[in-house]
Image (cartoon, rainbow, N blue to C red; front, side, top):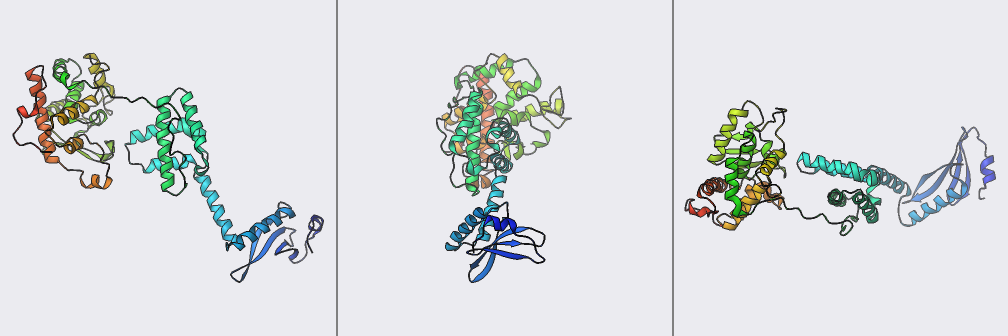
Length: 409
């Protein structure tokens, strides 16, 4: 006989547990302590099993019957309802732990990038994205929600930040797909959601102005460390941040090399910089000034820190190159001239610039590739700068004075 709410309410505890059957395997277990617990008896692979539904009256009669019917549907599909519930519970727990913020932080922790860049990216997310979507389970976030988040950031007046966050969000969701946390990527196509960031070309003078720049650098009266930094940027092709963070322990005087450790490189791989005799001479001069310290370019304000990134930029501004030349421009200038003159294989130039190899496996095996060729190229380049400074207004061809042996493309 089917149960009723009246019969359930009036059921009293006894010395021993007893059952009140409702039908189709559903029954209420009344314990000596007065607890009333819904149970469902079912058969799976010929074995009798029990499924716990919950306590009465928290789970009413109608709800208990509805859950019984759901269990029966699972059994018809050959699914064990107890295991199904465990799996569902685990998925919900995992979803609660796999919020966008949690997944983004895990992705950040394993991403192979420069620590300073990672810190900037994380800070952007903490300020702009996490407050809006960070608490949301990543498998529940839809494209419209991401778009709303980015539009709100753009309305705050930080278009460049919005574009950078868009790129980070896309990478986080790609990581979530690869980890199996989501099946479809809602951030896969975010074109035209916000205004596209204008393409920024870091200021660099044309090659024809190189002789005048070298003359201005030679005549510049300023801080010796800044002057040395400008000259070394021109002679080594490194990034400004890599240069000003240089430590004396990284200089190998015997091999005429500067080994920049992976943690200071943008692409997180050790980079060997061949040092021409002119670069070594500058470093020898600096050693007399800063050689007692760890940092080659330590700050006068705090000798435990390096000089500012803006030192070179400020010097170039005072020389009349405001908006026309930057520290990064020395890299671009060298790349342009060397590639245009076609005396060196592009791979050699790219390796010296420490640009990323898109093939990660190839990058691992080829980390020291072209070192001999690069040593020759860097000495030729240093000689070329000296010759350009001495000869006047025209940028001469490197082939006009380098050895006959050249690295063929």
